[in-house]
Length: 533
Image (cartoon, rainbow, N blue to C red; front, side):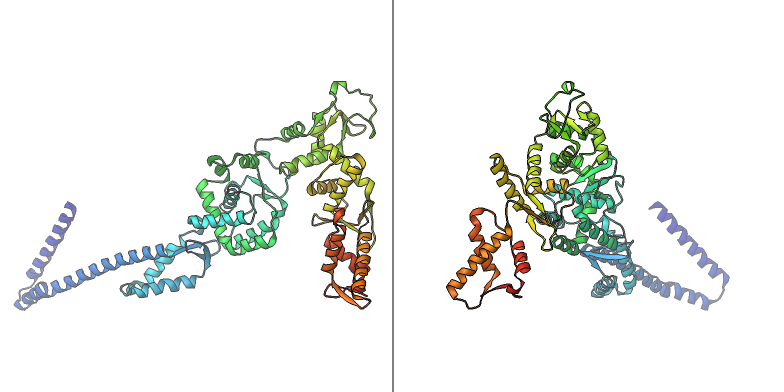
C-alpha cells in the first residue's frame, strides 16, 4: 500500500512539473485557455471512459473464467494426444467424440451468453486448451461406471469373483501406463482372441497396448516375476459384445485402478483380498522348480518300499507285483497335479524328469525307466481306464467315421469295471478326456466331446439304430398300411430313446442323424423328414 501511495505521488508530481513546463514555455492567453479546457473538461471525460473500459474488461474476464469452469464441469471432455482423439463422459460411460461437435457445443453455449461474444474466439481456444490437458487415462470414473465394468466380467463368468476381476483390470491399467513391465502374467490360451482384440482396440483409442505382459505359455520366465491369472473359457459372442460396447470404459477403469492402487501387486498386498486368490496369483513368486516338485511328491507319491530295502539286482517287469511308476505315468501324474492346481506347464518335460529322478534317485531304475517301490492314489483308476481302453476300443478308418462321445466312453467304462472287477468305479468326462489326450495323442477329438474313427466291442450303436428303425417301421405300417408316410426324424429319435432307455446307453442325436444320412440318404428329405413305405 505504501509503495502504491509513493508511486501515485511520483506520478502526480511528474504531471505537475509537466503542466508547469507547458505554462513556462508559452505566454499566450489562448493557449492557456486551451490547456484549461483540455485539463478541466476533456481530460476527465477521457479518463472516465478509460476507467469504464477497464471495469468492463475486468467484468468480462471474470465472466469468461466463470463460464469456462462451468462449461468444463458440466461437460466432461477428455483427450488422448497419442491418437488425437476426444472423448466424452456422461457420468455412466465414456464415448468417442468428434472435435467439431465439441466446438459446436462451445460456440452454441457462448452465443447463449451474449456478453461473451467479444471474447468468443478467446473463450473457445481456452476451453479447447483445457480439454487437451484432460488426459483420458487420468480420469476418475464414477462408482456406477466401475461397478458396471466389474459386473460385465462377473455376469459373463469370465472371472469368478470381483477380486479377480479387479486384479485383471489393474494389470490392464499397468500395461497401458507402462508400469511393472518386468512382470509376466500367465493366462490360459483360451483368452488369446479376447485379449488380442482388446489390445487392438486399445491401440486404436489410446495409442498403446494393454496386454504386453500377458503370456499364454510358460517359457523359462523368472519365477519371482511371474503371476498366475485364472480365467474361464470365454464364448466369442459374449466377449465380442463386451469389447465392442464397453472398451473405453474398461480402459478407463483399468487405468484408474492402476493409479489408485499403484500397481497390480500393491492391489493384492494392500487390500483385504481372499488369501486363496492372492496365494494362487503369487504362487510362482515364492517358489522354485525344485520346491514345486517337492510339493508334487508330497501330495501325489506314496512310498511302498523304503529305498534302502530295494535290491540293486531286483528284476522288474510290467507284471511284477512290486509297486512301480514308470516315467510316462509319472509325467501324467505331474500333468494331473498342474491341472488340479490350475498351474501352467511351468517345467519342461526333460527338466522335470531330471529333477524328480534326482529327488527319488534311490527309487529310480534306469533300466526299466521306472520308480520302484512307489505308488500313487491316482494311479489305479488311470491304469484301469487304460486297461479298459486297450481291451475294448477298436480303431476304425472307414469312410463313415465311427465315433463315440466321451460321455458314452465313461458309461461303458463304468459297466466294464462292474462286469470285470465287480467294482462300481466312476470317472468324470474331464478326467477321461485328459487320460485319452495324454496317452493317445493321435486320437481325433472334436469340441472335447466327439472322438472319431473308434468303436467299441461293448456296444454296437449301428445295430441299435437299425433295430429301432425296423420296429418303428413295422408300427407305422401296421397303423397306416403300406401307403407312403413321412415322419419327422425328431419323432423317430424320441421313439428310439424310449425303446432303449432301460440300457442307459442312448446314442446322441449328432451320430443318430449322421448314421441315417449315410445309410439311408434316399429316405431323408431336405426338411429332415423320414419316408416310410
